[in-house]
Length: 333
Image (cartoon, rainbow, N blue to C red):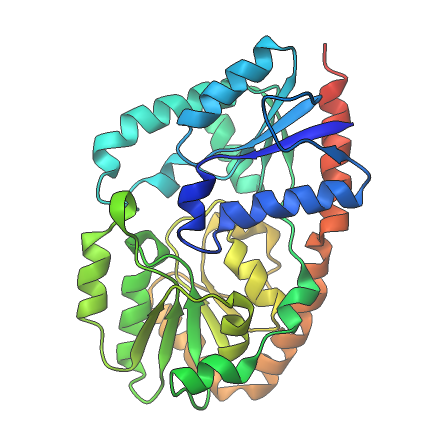
């Protein structure tokens, strides 16, 4: 089997450092190679299946049409729903009709869709997409997240004691307002958000305002080169995102052995209830954080369980599922 894994807008994604979609595509390649699949880097060359990872959907539309004309099977990884796009960037209302139209066209053009969560699959079905779907989560290199340098960022930012933290792009959809409000409730702690503010087309004026008005005990680091050491530096991972298709940073936090608090969203059906605390609103985030701060035993318990669970998403395991799905797609008439 020869497969081309295509990442749309790769240059733009690299400008933000590590991104969920960028990492997902990179590890798709690793996962497939670990299972004996031959990879093709250039979408214009020969292969049996192309696996598209769309961002803006414009390039992927062109690539999908090109592959279809040559009789190749087209699979699309569904990383994006309309919910994810809405309220993320300053221009979303202007471009949303165009993006949504291309999103639906691309999903309907595919021979099959790889949905990164059951929630994503249900959303795809709810908008009338009838293509074959496979639910396969994103892969993660678990051992990589056990090798972080804990002291590096703690020294750099003067961090002491228990540090609640988050990782991700600083945009409203990621729940930065809740994160800042949480910090106001615990002025004795330092809160750290590792990740850049959006810029250019993905700039968010609301996010900039929230960052400017944040209390002194909140640190927004901007882009950090060593994301593994960023996870190592923190102690309790707080992820108040309002909408996700999978929640890759949650998996990274689990692999890093960090206790996790997430917003109570349906997308986390892949995440066992006893593995992370869930909160519906700012008040519940405060209560769940207080619980972890007061209960060292619970923190240690969650820290031990996280990496064991994350191994289920190792590249070898995810690669087996991808190969099985691709074999089914190749058998389609």
